[in-house]
Length: 458
Image 1 (cartoon, helix red, strand yellow):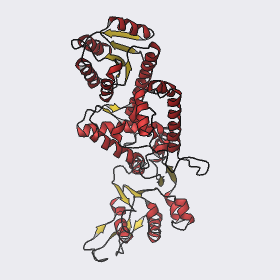
Image 2 (cartoon, rainbow, N blue to C red):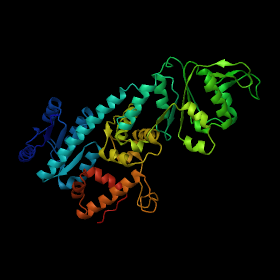
Image 3 (cartoon, rainbow, N blue to C red):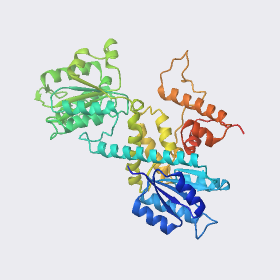
Image 4 (cartoon, rainbow, N blue to C red):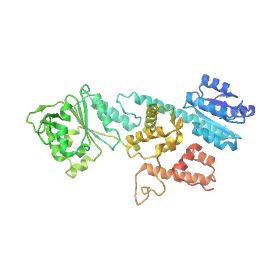
């Protein structure tokens, strides 16, 4: 990618100084709003340095904020670095909240500014790669699956291979990992796709009613059976039956399900007629079936019948490549639903999500992003909009020699907290210097300091 930088500055001396700082990339200079917007529309620079005080209001900030708003409304992925005086910190922070990438104080230090600009280009390029991955994921033949991580891409390949077959499939994974999404993908790619997809959650229906829900019943077969009713198995004839949370199915009903799978016939509750059924059965659970078999809570013969192929879905914490990808997908989805002009996640929001343990996995991330979009008042979603927190120093799950906790998210947040405190100590609590030591931007460091409850000594 050809890197292009637009410098918006009305001071000729500073224009020359800034141009000299970036001799190795293509640089354009504008001294006013009209020239800046003309160059921007013609050249589409990825990074911009912007002086907020421009003519005809050089003493104020209206023109600078207007340019900031216009450019981000046209190209929200553009990285704008606001250049301000030492006394303009409040306006610089307001610019960050309005979508600016970072700010830099005058007088300009060439080495430091070059580093900030180079990081802005790097982040822009990463975001474009993520965008391309998201577009590729949305075109995936597995409808509803958004992924770029190796583990999930491998799962998609397995689904594509086995979908056309008659193999029984067991999908394992924590709650919220997308087990039903996989089941629907298997149905859509199978020979049963023209039939119905019927799902039933075995854990959500009382044991006394589950048999009737699965096999149906005849009129008068029990109290309340005022009419004949087809069960889910019969409704799914020539289609796909998805038995979610099969680990919660009672043992007596497991025996009846096994008989159906062996003979492919059912009898409604209270009936005597055998009904031939042709349906593909896909099962899923978040429980350890093998442990349940050991405890005589699940039939081993049924397990072998329903698990020709076992697909294990990794939790979101093990799919780091997918976290920001999914977050941006949900951001776009809910911004459109809510009619909001939220274009992207801020770096601090991305960092927070990467370090947060979504115990509810993709389902929880979906809820977090939906809530955040509703609460956000900016065109860039900020870390505080997410309304989530990382563990504190007093968190009982922190890794130590005695507890031997293997929670990677907790271990990572603890390591980050220690690294930030050490950097602040070495930098004498200077945020800019500490950010350089940590190789992150100041806004990201500010956000991490707040989220990790780190106190800065005055």
